[in-house]
Image 1 (cartoon, one colour):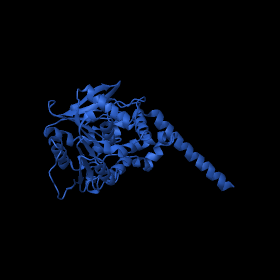
Image 2 (cartoon, rainbow, N blue to C red):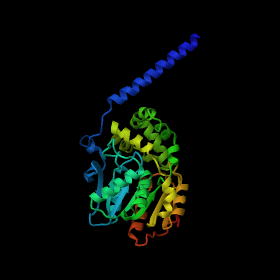
Image 3 (cartoon, helix red, strand yellow):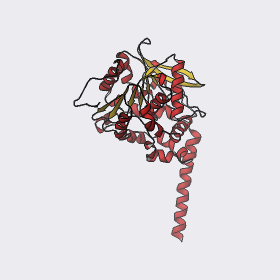
Image 4 (cartoon, helix red, strand yellow):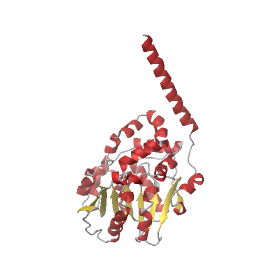
Length: 337
């Protein structure tokens, strides 16, 4: 009985300590991340602009000649324009007006509590963002969760999409089976753990090890870790991360992909463990006018891991009237035409 009472007492003390730590974390975190406090640390901040979209401030970076064909780059879940830091200038050099946008709730875009953080909500935001910039049609490039947004935009507002590029794209709800997303879906628990996970460089480093191919782990730098941590390091960022995971509804994208008529380039890393390559084959099968390129020794973010071949493929596809790309079978590339 004494041992049992001692165990209960210890358990209660531990639980109390954890609860106290969570309370302190929630009470002491900032409400938001101010641009003027972080701009000096943002890569390509001289290219940064802000525009109001339906009452929310959207951050984007623009590269290249404004008279050139427009190309919109959309990042993945918890990411930002940082993932395009190498590819965006290279695509601009290839002859495009390149605009990398932070989705609402991520990067340095506003993170309003009232926003619809669903895939459809973000796709609507992209269409209105394009309207505000005076862009009628563009090549739309979506990476990971941004691929889901690009797919949704193409299905619901096809007139905005000149051509479509899907990069290791989310196309169903399978990612929500990940243990972290499952925990985040639990009300109360998600609110408690998210601030600690976002603030943990060790956790973010571990997560990146599962995102990049093993040969590319040298890319896991402090700068890359901070590119996720810094913009989400506040109450509104924590809310956006949770709201997005809880509004995840991507199954219809896989089901309706056959309705897409735009010329489509699908790019996938052969070692992607986040969104397995079977999803790329499925999209290629469903989208009639698609080309499928597999990059070898590459994980979930080809635009970073294989930036040179990535930009070559995208620019060639976008420039060609029929969306063709030359065969590049070799050490780095496999085509599934």
